[in-house]
Image (cartoon, rainbow, N blue to C red; front, top):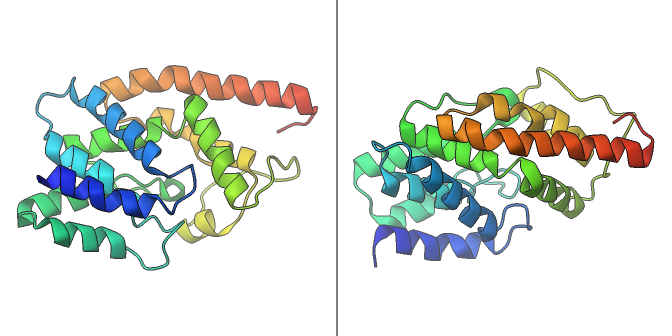
Length: 210
C-alpha cells in the first residue's frame, strides 16, 4: 500500500465524523479540482498535492479542539521523508482563509491546493456547503440586521456565529479575486457569478436587503 492509499484510509475515518460541508465528498471534489489545475502546471508534484488535499481538513479548528493532533498523527503513521513531510505541511498551512489572515502560498503545490479548496467553497457546491454547515451549527439562514465584518482577527472570525448569508460577504465573495493559478482564476469566474445570482434571487424572494 502506497502513501496515498494509506493516507486516504486514515483520513476517511476522521471525515466520517464531520458534517456534510467537510466530509470526504468535499475531499474528493477538492482532489478533482487540484488535478484539473495541476494538468496545466507541469512542474507540480502530484503526490504532495494529493497528500495535502487528503490531510488539509483533518485538524480543522471548527471540528477539533486540539490543534494539529490528527494531522500530526496521520503524517507520522505515513513515515514520509522529512522533505515530503515538510512540503505537505507547508501546503496545508497556506490553505486556510483565516478571516483574511492567510499564509502566503509560495510553492506551486500550495497555490494549486489553495485554489482547489476555495473553488469548492464557491459556486453551487459552495452555496450548498455554506448552508449545510450553518444548519449543523444552528445558524440563521440570513439576518438583515447583521453587518458583515471587515479587518477581523482570526479569533473574531472564528468565534462569532454569523448567519449563513453573512458568510458570503465576509469570505466567499472575496475568494475569486485571490485565486493563485491561471486555471483557478478561470474556474472561479462562473462560480462567483452564480453566487451573486443566488444572492440577488434571495433578496427578491425575501424582500430583504441582504
